[in-house]
Image (cartoon, rainbow, N blue to C red; front, side, top):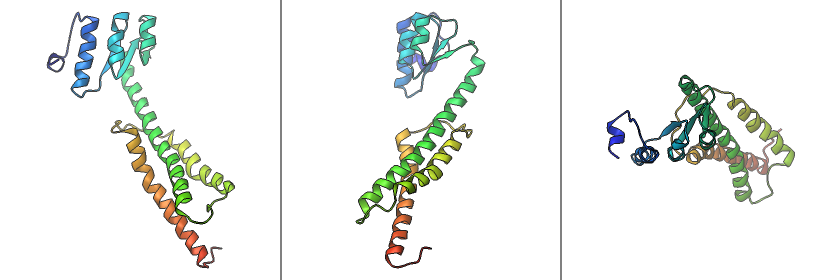
Length: 184
């Protein structure tokens, strides 16, 4: 187990030892990626956080891996990692937008003692302008940030303040209408 952090190169490693190395690194808090091309690599590939099969490898290995390098060129790995970061980062942003709408709709339904303040047609317009269009544009945005923390925690910490702001503004507008303010 300690050899996994002391040495950088291992040769003639059995399938059992490969899996043990992956598990030892994971136990020490590392995120582990494993590459392989043979059936003997499958146990270690399945144990790794990210498994990569080589293009010319065994079919079983390609099926067990999460990713297959079609040209067996490791120079493409930075591009693959960058694309993965972009996708996960943008999904996190878009999910936060969708959760804002869900949270403020739920909060308004619980907090307001009178009827719900929005008509369905209004919610459609609000959703398309405040969630649909921005979420679409966010999916195209470049993002090179490392993925850190919990997905759900990140989404909630971004969505709750927005939902609270929408609730406060909606309740203030409704209070203004109830007090006779002319909103026209």
